[in-house]
Length: 200
Image (cartoon, rainbow, N blue to C red):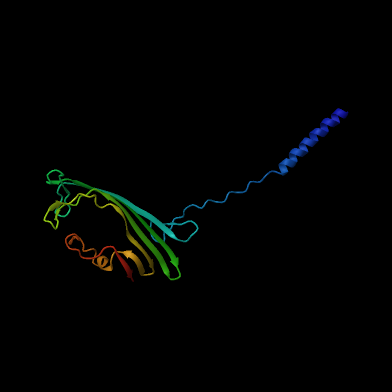
């Protein structure tokens, strides 16, 4: 009898302990929902909301690669000088560019607040050519330095309503449509392109 009661008591104790453990089960907190990037279609395609803000951002740009061989035009010719005898030779040139553009937009009490930036990363081997005469009358050939290298901030402006402040193309250039396809600015420099502006 004692053995039976001992076994029954042990079984009852085990059942009670396992039931207590089931009652005390740890509840895992629900994970917070991830904040995915939300599309912002207020200012056009390609915009998204910066997480945690009401500001819309768009990132874009392009990669460009040009190559030319020989005398490709009176203003765009690629030429260099021989180091030995100084003969003028046709050669090649190449230019590479990566442009990064950003646009932002946000609604404020005073109107739409917008910004725009454009940064260009350029590299090229195009050669300048020509000759110059020193004060002693000695004619020297111009060197062939690499050209079109560097980083430039071409546009950076902020606009509130219709008031724009920053670096942009002049109102004259945009008004005349950049002279269309008629005038090349290499021949006729008809206006400033990158300039500081305050315009409405």
